[in-house]
Amino acid sequence: MIEFKLPSLGADMDEGKLLEWRIEPGDHVKAGQVVAVVDTAKAAVDVESWDEGTVHELLVQPGETVPVGTVLAIFLAEGESPETSAAPARAAGRPGAQPRAAVGARPSEPLVPAPAEERRRVSPAARRRAEELRVPLDAVSGTGPGGAVTLEDVERAAGAGAAADRSAAMRQAIAAAMSRSKREIPHYYLSETIPLGRATAWLARRNAERPVIDRVLMGAVLLKAVAVTLGRFPELNGHHVDGAFRPSAAVHLGVAISLRQGGLIAPAIHDAAGKALDHLMAELTDLVKRARAGSLRSSELSDPTITVTNLGDQGAESVFGVIYPPQVALVGFGRVTERPWVEEGRLLVVPAVTASLAADHRVSDGHRGALFLGTLRDLLQAPEDFLEAK
Image (cartoon, rainbow, N blue to C red; front, top):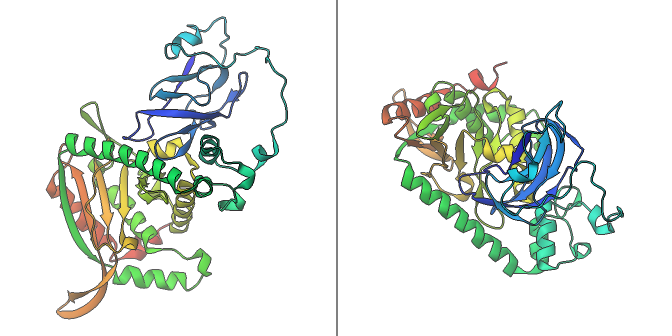
């Protein structure tokens, strides 16, 4: 018997609301398959299964809000049957939970075709919000990819009050997570000004060879540089859990993204160190679009091993962030600006950026943090060495 539990999708998540099942009893589920949609304080998230099995029972109904760790469903492993299962599935759920259905159960009502509006491309968060606000979806114009209706579209249709309510809930969630971070994590902070003349020139040459739509932003270069540098500083890449640090073999970069309704979310780009720059840029673009449309996957929120925040587009020259627990470090970049710079006895004007590091003193110290920033600086002085590596 396999218990499918509501995962934690971030340090600020204590509970979630089940919006939709993507499976039915009797379905075979593969590892990595999206099986449910859950609403957190920040977004509607596609939740994946990490196990393979056959759906036996669905214990939580759509619309219910339950704590993290609640058993949502029961799967049967290969070779198991309801008769040979170790324990009744219902007992594994939260008290009072009623199963939606079980294998072999006869539905009480015949299946009927979904109404026309159900067949429109509508994000789960938008559909739920439309029901709450009693906004007819056929009256909402979709601005998402392919004309999909997003959460923002529904809230615009309902008026500014709905957006304000959700923004307040998100602010409360962020406040709780950041309060926990500052209370539990002994932060230390370092910064380094990094000249970007060589990286900027390399990127300009590369972009000149491609259409505007396919050009790479400096933000992707900085992400790649951080991911490669972390390979030499494993103590900054991982999680502090149950009083101990657990380093991660892979670099899953959490990218801080501002949401249109207010607040931040930091989903992961997986295995960033091994991705080519073009691939990294494509994933970054896709991640931003899906984060703002409310269509992220649970692994993108639970897997980040370090977070990178870039406030350059907001006009800030430097940013000193707060670590997202259970991560142990956060890297920040400010705005790229032209600054006076001395090189080989010559006074030059070069593009430069301030990079900052917030790190957990339980796991690393200022000496290693300074070496990390120095290595990051040096790496960006020879961009071809790590951006063109096969």
